[in-house]
Amino acid sequence: MKIRNREELLSHGDVESRRIVLDITEKTLERLDGRARIKSIARMDGDCFCVGEKRWDLSKKRNVYLIGAGKAANHMAMAIDEILGDRLTKGIVIVKIAEPTDIFRRTDVYVGGHPLPNEEGLRACKEILKLVDGAGPDDLFIVVISGGSSALMSCPIDGLTLQV
Image (cartoon, rainbow, N blue to C red; front, side, top):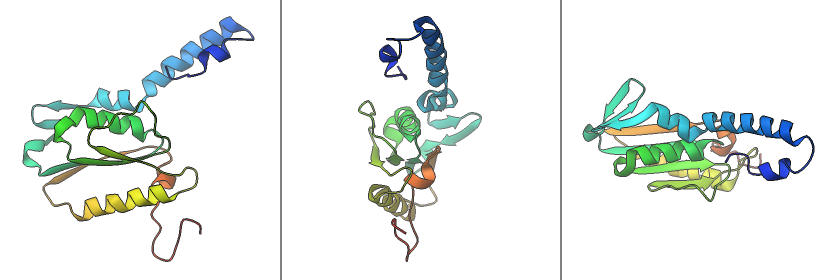
């Protein structure tokens, strides 16, 4: 359930009207869920990773990396992690909140700051830069970005700090 305090919301007021609004809201939130949306467009077809009509033959890739940031990055990255399984070499995702229900097999999760950047988001960015710097032409990067990524994925240039 997306609406975690449903029972509390139904405990007073015009309960029937509230139930209708909550049912509509719940269905809408389910359809907008990042994990469900990614799984509706991405899949494996043999050795090929497919997103819509685009296809990448993973048997021709040395490494497959996942990078993500944003308030919906948990669910989007979980979908990619699930779809790729053992074909995913490594993932790094910066989220706003690490949920107890988040399950990642090959992805490191960092809790960045939002709306203000924090040290953990900066640490994650440095790890992403190391990953990118070590990559070669036969590596594939899959990137999932959602709202909030500009704060969560902050990496100030030399001379600036997170406090500036």
